[in-house]
Image (tube, rainbow, N blue to C red; front, side, top):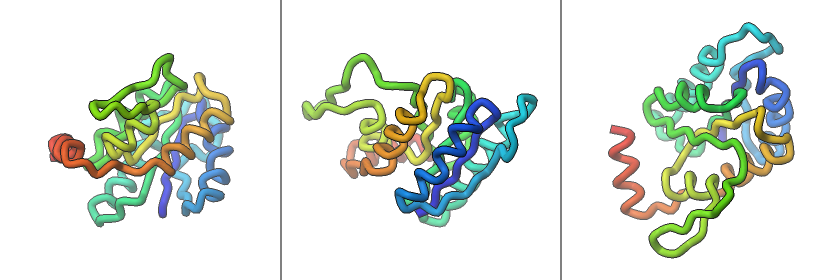
Length: 162
């Protein structure tokens, strides 16, 4: 299991915390940068690298690979990651005020929903909105929640990936 991780200067400290956390969850972690905290860096450079590597794994059929990307709001990072073929990056900046109930009546939070319904393989974290503890909890849920493999979700994902 491979995890690519990348962050800009705002997410640098959180990225450093999450590397050992992901390793403890059993992932071989590849740090795609930033490698120093530099306020003048450009997040697309690092996030793009992580997303390209995840995309290459997906193309090779390595569907257990994941990417964690981190920035101030996480918005731009998700946009960059989602440009790569096969990457489905979800944005997370904290617990929603309400839970989601799906068509079958099952209750999901945001992270579980994006994994179970969308088979997201990348997670964008908003460093300015999350504590280290919240980020670790989100990453662990993201890593541990399986895709549902329901036909309707498979059909929809194929439409995204084509």
